[in-house]
Length: 289
Image 1 (cartoon, rainbow, N blue to C red):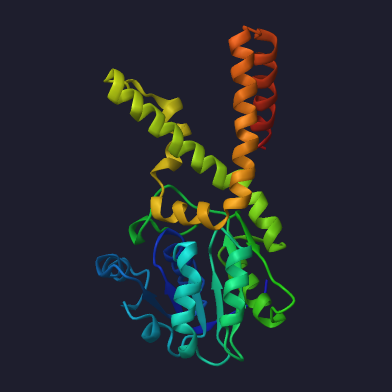
Image 2 (cartoon, one colour):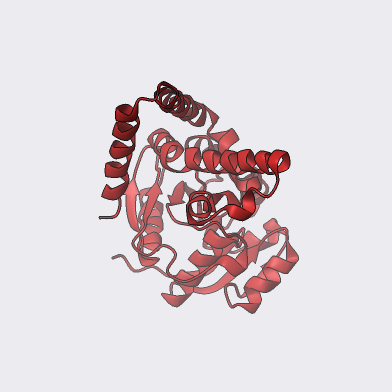
């Protein structure tokens, strides 16, 4: 594993991902100081109190000044806007990366914003919980998880190697992937499940309004299945809109599946209902290995 050390790291968006990365890098001795940047002063104060960051500011321009390494952890629709504001103030030789769950549009929008001798590498750690904010951050979030990096022909190799080393230091297995391929995969295994979870909770909430006292009977199955519906609505709004083509394709495929099982149940076809359920069980059980 390549050893890295940065004098100053700036985390823009000190939430679960940005905060947990700061903790991991500090524990590994990979930086001298970490500066947090964000809109919420109380969250930044919490991050400082917890030792996640060493100082903070709400001014992006001030936060990136003289920083060797900048990690942008804001909702995906805001990534390019934030970087555009910060770009004139990046230190020469600085490396900039993001943690957004959508990559093709982010990389396309951000690369032209990079000043000469400032290097961008698109990234996405496949880790997280339904919680958000600095208080949700913890050591070990990225341990034994994958992190996808999406370099292009414009990506500086040295910057790519340093970003790769950073995520490996945090405990991740780094995978290099085309940005478009990333978006299709994540639409399948992450974006679609979140849309389904939100929709399921809203469906049951509608039943609560009509029938009353529905949710008080929810147990482990409902709570486990809908856990991710407690995730940040702002973040997932942006992800769905920015990756809408892939998300809409997957929603169409999911609707076909729903229509099929609906037809089997309507017809009373026990064999086909069980066949669908058995296939799903085999696939889901394989994830435990």
